[in-house]
Image 1: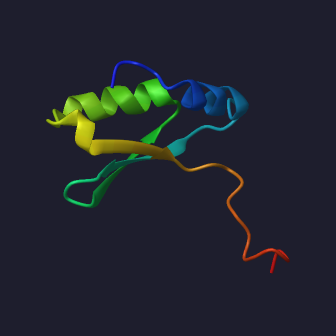
Image 2: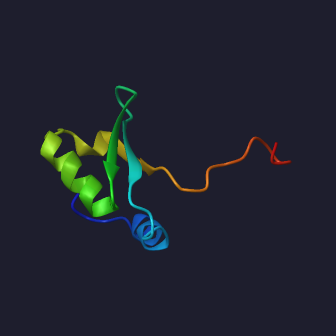
Length: 76
């Protein structure tokens, strides 16, 4: 997880004014999620590394964005 994804780097730059984001590390083999609060992707990676998870190819990373989808196409 040491290598930073370009898309995450763009998201971090876009949301620099936010104090904290939620990063979701999803294990695709066992279908469970680990939520990590972090200021940026590098901090989220560091915290994930502290957990010592094996088989990194089984993990996908997602991030909560400040603007979440609305209730539908009409915004309701």
